[in-house]
Structure formats: C-alpha cells, structure tokens
Length: 58
Image 1 (cartoon, rainbow, N blue to C red):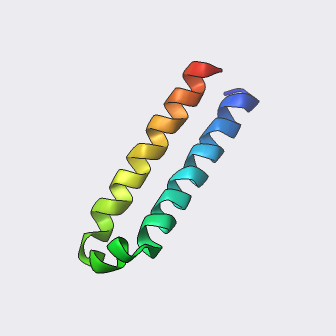
Image 2 (tube, one colour):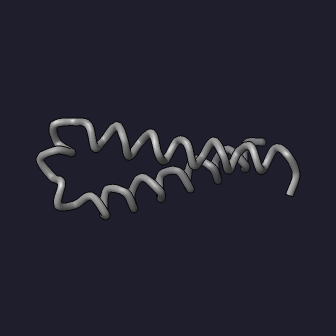
C-alpha cells in the first residue's frame, strides 16, 4: 500500500466520523436516536464511497 492510498483511507475514515457526528447532532438525529446503528452504517458506507471516488480520481 502506498502513501496516497493510506492517506485516502484515513481521510475517508475521518469523513465518515464527521458525517456521523454531524447527523447525530442535528435535530433529526436526536429525534431518531433509536436508529443510531443504521445512521452509523450509512455514514460508513458514504465514507467508503468517498474513499473509492478519491482513489479513482487519483
């Protein structure tokens, strides 16, 4: 694994975490606390898609 791919992975993980934190702190996220696992899964899937797109572009 080269350095660029590792940096893309780290950025994708941080993006997924930021997406999850953002959604969790919104009014909608607080109203739907019972779906936290599903929200987390969707945030991780969005991060994977962002990472894949970044790899494809680079």
